[in-house]
Length: 485
Image 1 (cartoon, rainbow, N blue to C red):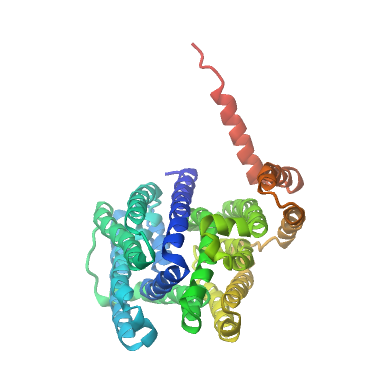
Image 2 (spheres, one colour):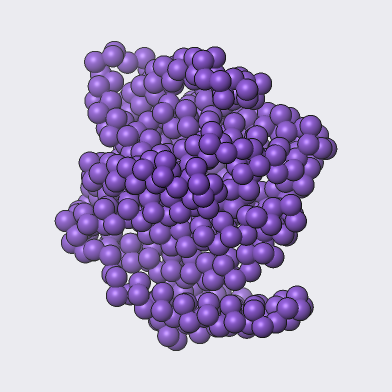
């Protein structure tokens, strides 16, 4: 399947998933309330923390190694068997620690009703083997399967979740999505690979790589999921509910660019073997332009209209999340740049040590600032910790860019974009402050879209955006041409 179709399928998948979240989250946040949301999100964060240990970088390693097989069935069988068996052994070890933690940690024992069910999510997350399908660029299958399961999930949420007392049921349904995906994926994988039990000595081929990539993932958790867990330990369910609502809205937006990055990683992994650095740099250039064209307008809208967004999605009880939402919005740009550097360059080129170095820097900053800030500044402290950690990762990893592909980040270009959209945000903020009528703000949205168009087309000369406009114009023109008799 072509690169454009894969990108479209993955963007369709991510967009539809977050559209479904936009549909369900306003309902769930109102039905469960801030405390109910806080309880379920804390439990889910604990489960995700253990999943990160059980996966140990398998998603990245598996996608990269399966992509390298280039259609060789025998080689793909061996790679799949090695990685899956090693992943399964690690998962069983992590599951043992998870069960023991529930029994001996008082804070976790309080949530044992949810966490026992969460054990199924840890197991079936391993069975999902999403890395197999991503490595083969089977994005059409991933999209159709996930959409079907998610639509069923949405129907069940609206049917069964009726009040604050249903917070446990909501958590069980979320776990059920992973169980369903894992079951279907494992069965369908037999169409592409055969699992062959491997001797333990053979598994050592990937153990070191999994250790490096897993360390990166675990370090990343120290300033993402760990933020929520630590916030839950030092504050309360209400504070967790406010903070996770703010970062959930942010995650919905950042997921769109992640869809693009995932496809590009598979393609660059395949191109690495050809040593075509010019084409790789060209793909990266498009990635930067897509990021700037998407992230910066969303950051402006998110910061200026944060009260309206939070009110519409979560409801009036979450007004405290407005400031947190504004604080994390710039992370769209930081995380987007980080994904390009790490997922599209360093990982496909096997620079796992450089990736680990960046994640260690982020983790050290995250742990230190968590201990210093969160007990006093609560959710606001967590937001600052996350931002500082992601910036540390970006700065450390971007240093390695030039040695890998012969070109680093174009900081001048980035500054041009920031200056242009900074002026736009100043104008929008002034209008937001001076005008209070909601219908006037609604009428200003077309003006905002026009301003973004002028900036991208005439001021910044974003070639990817211009090419997209040309393609749309060409399609319209050809659609109006009558076929010859």
